[in-house]
Image (cartoon, rainbow, N blue to C red; front, side):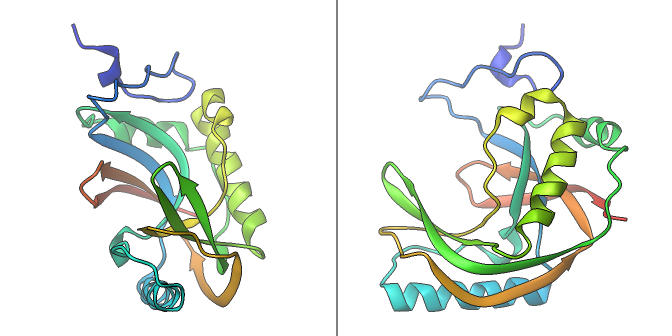
Length: 198
């Protein structure tokens, strides 16, 4: 019998799995996300390096191909389900939203127990991101509504915080959202499926 920690977390399909014990963290996660286009990803990487230099931050910036704004968490566990994209696709068929402009214009830090996370946030396009997330949460089921959502893009896991500060805006037109398969702790992301905003 499969342990329940290996079962997919699909909001609305019963209870979410209990958290794995500290000695057995999930090896895989799946979440919906917005990803910047290549020119925006390059500019974000430049902003990251500048913030590191100006604030004396240590650490390795996220790879440009891993940059994203997280939307609902869909699943986590030990073995990635082969049919997950098909299952998610069936639930989000009702989501019909046009492309949205993303404007990242604020740098800040989130604190974790042993490190800080340098992120970019949005002050002007945040309503668009909230709206998309709300539609996806509703499509995926009521369980996802209980997960706190603060739109942001992670840039770097580092040794100290930075003061909240404006940055030169990075813009792109988000024309799709994607399902990301994250290999936990390995710095590896794979785009499993994508759906247009239309």
